[in-house]
Image (cartoon, rainbow over all chains, first blue to last red; front, side, top):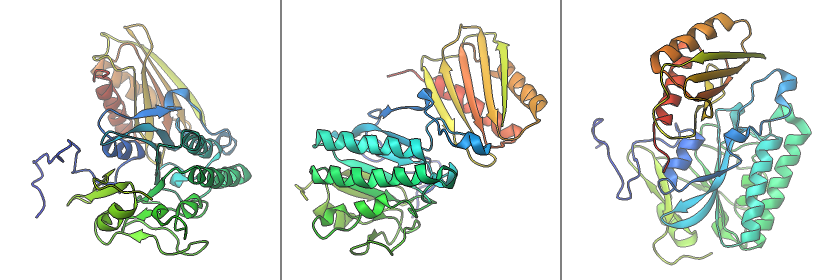
Length: 244
Length: 105
């Protein structure tokens, strides 16, 4: 049923199918999701754009403030991508963390033609950052709406340990909307997101594996999700002509 | 928070041409290591920011052992520590050196 441990199973495109989305770090998710070697990070860890608030609380910082943003390609098609690191402060939104996502969404809004993938893994707003964190979430919501209004496809993938909660409100904006049904978030069965609040309907919830909503996705979104026996998932552009 | 810095002479230049690598995450009992190839070939610098204060001697020993084992000449390591144990620190440092062995595409 499952592949032998020694077997290094590869997808036709060369993607590693033994890795688990649920277990993977933000950087690993980005690396495995995109075409090999195509990822170009914006404001990488070497720039050390860390949170200005954590020092006050004697808490350690992370060089990327818990989010990886950049661009790359998915089966040759350009995408913008953001991935939250759920293990750093529960993937919570801080000022810098939020600003990186807002900047990415604004770039997508201006360029118009490149879709955005947001790999959520968050418990909400980083409490230590208080109003700055709340403000960051508000800016993200606005940026999502502006990007969508400009015709940009914004897709949320929720499959991490932290799910998508609280100030993960951006996911609600990305989420069901009567006008653009294709903007539902994709939620893996082992992960979770609240179903109260301004939802217009239920998100797609995968029944097995991490993301297995393949048939539903292919007809309405620009991406298709592939699931492996090891609960990994890979998003690839749908082969059939699909539009919003 | 406590800031620590250890400077060592390395026997040899670190293998590979990769200029930057990052591994790990800042979480309880874990740490992130950012490696950068920015120093002269025989030097090695390890800078640490840690939430667990008072363990300078342990860090000193772990870093000295690491430099002796892997000879990471030319590399600067910046560490954000969330209270990792010495074995985890050694593992992450070794992973960072391994990542730097790759050649940039």
